[in-house]
Image (tube, rainbow, N blue to C red):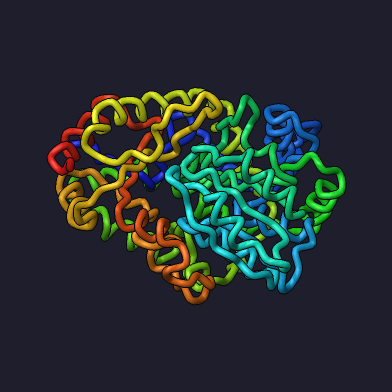
Length: 423
């Protein structure tokens, strides 16, 4: 049976991760426990983050959007404040802004799929309070220019590092440039605990407010934690093998698991309508914290692998397609959470053909300036035509996988498939 290639179905998980998940699944007394004797379960991951980034505060939550929501509270973002963020982003980066009663202002992107500093300047008003910089797919944004604009306009810079754990700009870790930053450990991120996130800052006042907010939160329910622990097990031992037999069988089984709430979806229905579900914000459960910690210890291995696979794509596809994230720049060290290619062909048809070959590349980052594609743009206050580059990119992009389970042989399978579609 041909092993299926997938961009978004728990791609990071290795044997040790699944073994740990099995172990935790049968230790429910640990799921929401904070300590065992002197061992501070929920604090170990936070301490590792503080050491890695050389920062004073790292505060964990049950998702990246939870961390972002709490950062907005700590920064006292109020009703009517404008928060500028790039288009070609996820609704998870928009909904916390709406939840505060603030106004998201979408800025167009540049050739690296990141926030365009020139369009940022044009869209600043007297109501502007903060700027979110995304570092799309682990490629650092133009921080020198964005920081300069923020200083000149008295704007707070927040880094959305959901794609960029381990990336660097001018030798400094992404996540240490703004007043605060947040990371995601979602199922298809740089490291994964299915759900999970971290807020970081060096500002004492902000850090204390983050910690105070966290302490007041509850843990998610045991059922919610159970769903997340089941995810890597069922995906690896049931869903992916089913996709390996037949794409329709895989889709039916995954649909069944979602319909009957055996597994949770990455994005909830309410989030596509600009709302925050009841599951957020919450504390990061100890079980998921331990999964994230296990992956964090492998971060450099993961990122080196991503760069290696991306180099293979680059060498073989650069004469065929527009590759937005390949420009040589000694100032940046990217992590390539995905390797995007831009095509003039019908991407729906190409993905359909790829599925026939057990190559599943529809990761949701396409077809809309606010993803997933079925997000209600009116509800998240995106105005069509306001960010033409982002809209054009969304219609041309296909993202190739770079995770630890993509071997050189599999990357060559992907390359051979795409070569026939080159311009």
